[in-house]
Image (tube, rainbow, N blue to C red; front, top):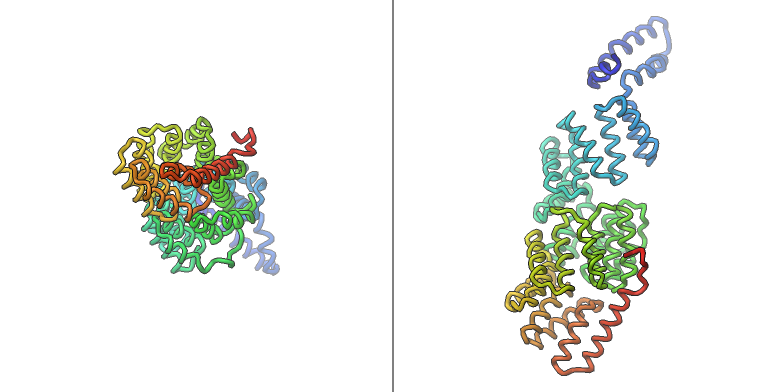
Length: 469
């Protein structure tokens, strides 16, 4: 009987409450000349009884917003055990799971909500956000589109759609959404960050710099605007600036994973291998199922000659994931260290198919083609890499390698000089320039460059802890 009563939808139970409780109570209070406040005292307990699932959902939602996770979890568990079809309890539970970064479970709970109420705009937006974290970008965009169709002025949907489009490399679509958000004045820092990501991924550095030019010295630690500055500084090869910004972010902040991953990448570029491994360990502890930190770890391990461990990190990433391009890059990088040119070319081609504007993928493809002695194609791929992102030293390194292998010594030297002007920390460029100088007969300069490479490589593998392997 009780289960049948609570299976009645909220609106009908509310009407029943008004008809059975409020109206008679009001009549009694009027007949007995009781104060108006007495009606509320009389009906409040009955209100909780009539709307018990909704009351529990309200309590759980309030608790999670005040970070009372254990209390919220207890209420949700109790409520869902008795009212498994309560939309409010399912929504509150999904919010708790989302904040705990248990995105698969949050998606499952939101799917249950939407099976009960397919036009719940907030649930569509929330599921879209969860799916973005799960790298289910196509599904995430579908949810966002449904939400926008139902409520065009709910700006959160444009934000999740921008994320979903960015994940699918639909950069123009993402930029369209970020411009809408900035025009609406909603989620502006997050929209700026997405726009910066789009510009950097498509080699439009000047536009990314224009977006962030007014932020320098004005951003709060751990915010989207601070993260935008981190991305721009990293692509400028200004790793010290990246580390300075990231050093102010604690593990408890909402964007901690993103900052710590960029910190790890900067340490790697500075040949600080032990520190890079420590940062990737922190990032993985925050989001064990996130992929970028595992892949960055693979690059560090491969560069240190620990190829089996690097391959193991790549194997963690599921097939068809959003990080497919970076996964193929990591695999190509490992094959490069193993001089398996055919496999390297296959992996880099797959990376380019997934993300045609990836500079590193074109650079790796160029190196593979040089290894296969397909020099004209190698030079084309290297030139493509340097065109996409002229400041990326690895692109110039790949082009120089193509020139060197085809006997064009002066062109190779010019490329390597450009690489080291852009990024004086680049190990590969020093190593290759030593070979170029040696072929040109300049043994003194070759020895200096080799010494610099040896110094950086020794720093990369120094002080590694066994537990990090």
